[in-house]
Length: 618
Image 1 (cartoon, rainbow, N blue to C red):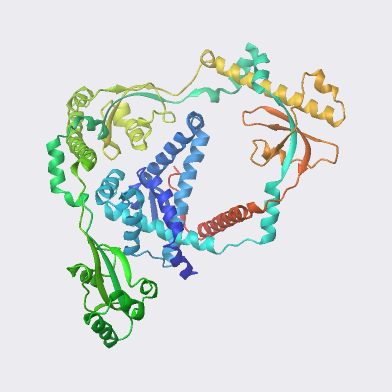
Image 2: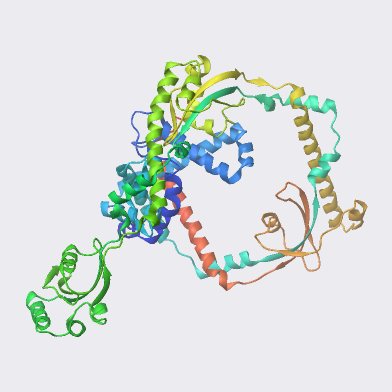
C-alpha cells in the first residue's frame, strides 16, 4: 500500500486537485494555516494545533464563498444563531479532519520531495504566462496571498502528502458488473405523473389573522423578536487597489524597465539536434564515432547503430531543445557545437554514450516593447501602488493613534473619507466589517466602551481599516408595534400552509375512495400526464411512492421547491436500460465508496486520537 500511495502522489489526479481546489482556498488568504505559535487555540489534534486565528480566517473565507453562491438566502440563514453555530462547527470539523490526515500521513512516513514540490509549482497554470512559469507572477501572487515562497512550498507539501492517503483509498475500490447494472436501471427508470399545485402564497393571502392572535403569538414567542446588541461604526479604509489610479506610469518608466529586464521578454536559444546512443562500453562508442569522423552520414549511422530505438528510426532526430530541460552534460555538448552539421565527441550520461549532431539553430527572440508595454505598465502600477500603500499605512496608524477620539485627521492624512455604517450586530455586519479581526476590534473594551480608535487592522494583503464605535444599542425585545406586520405575515403563512395541507389530504382521501367529484367541487384539476426522471424537482418524493397496479394510480402529497403543496398522481413506472450510463454509474459508485472509506478512516483516527475543542468549550 505504501508503494501505491507514493506512486499516486505524482499522478494527474493530484495535479487536478491542486489546480481546482488548493488555489480557490489558498488565494482567499489562508497562509496562516501553516503555523501556530502561542495563539489561542480553536482545536488541538494530538500535537497539531489549530489556532483561533487560523480558524477565523478559514471560516471567513468559507462564509464569503457561500455568500457569493447563495446571496440573500445565505444572509437570511446567518440571521439564525443556531445555524451560525452549526456552520462554524462544520468548518472547524473539516480543519480537524485535515489535521487527522496530516498526522496519519506522518505516522506512515509519507514524504514529498523538494523536486516534486518544484515541479508541481512550475506546472501550475496560475503561475504561468504563455504556457511557461513566470517568476514575477509567482512572487506577486504569493505576496498577495500572504505567503513566502518557503511557506507556500510547505503548504503544498502538506496537501500533496494528504492527497496520497486519499488516492490510496480510491485505488483500493472496485465495482461489480451486476451492481452497476442494477444501479443503472434504477437511475434510468422514468415515472408518469399528473399534478395539482396548491399555491401556499394564495392561501396565505386569504387567511384571516386577528389582533388577538397576533398578540398571543407575540407574547408566547418574544424570544424570536429580540434585537441583538448593535453598534454604529465609523471607519477609514485604505487598499492598494484604490491607489492604482493615483500611480500614473510614464512611457519613460516603461522603456527603462523594458531595457533593464529584456530577459523576461526574450525566448531562449533553441537547437535542433540528433543523437546516437551507445549503451555498451566506450570502445563500441568510439567505433561509431570513427565512422562519423570518416565521413559516414549521421542519419544512416543512427539508424544502423543507435540503441535509442524510437529516435534511431528517425535518423537520431530529437527535434528542438532548449536549456534547462535535459541532462546537463548532453545540454552543454549540444550548445557548444558551432556549425549546423557538426557533431560532438562522446558525451557520457546515465543512459550511456551519446554522439550529438547540430541540425539547426534558432536565435533568441525578444518581444518588441509595443507588444509588452501594457503588461509592463500594469506591473509598474501594482508596484507603485504597493509602495504608496505601505507609506500611507504608517501615516494612517500614526494619526489614528495621535488623535484617538476622531478619525478625521487619520482620513485626511491618507486622502480618504470617514465612512459610517448603519446599526448592525455581529451576525449581520456589512461585508467589510464582518472580518473576524475587525469585529474583534469593534467589540473590544477600548473601542466599544472607551470610544477610542482601533489599531490599523489588516483585512487582506494591502487592504487595511481603522474603526471606531459611534453608538451602541443594547439587546432588547422589539415592541409589538415594530414587528406586528412580521407576526401577521408569519401567522398568515402558517394558516395558508395548514389550509393547503387539509385540502390536499381531502383530495387524496376522496380519490382513494373513487370520489372524483371532489376535485370539481373544489375547482381543481390535474395537469396532463408527463414522464419524469430523477432530475425532476419532485423526484425525491415521487420515486419513494409505491408502484401502482395496472390501470390504477398512487396518490400522495409532496412539496415543491417554492414550498407549495403538490398533489401527485403516479400513473405508471417505465423500466429502461441504458448501457451508455454504465461508466458514469461505475464512477459514481466508486466515488461513493471512496467517500465512505474516507469517512470510516476518519472515524477510526478520531477514536484513536486526542482531540480537544477549546473554541467550542468557551
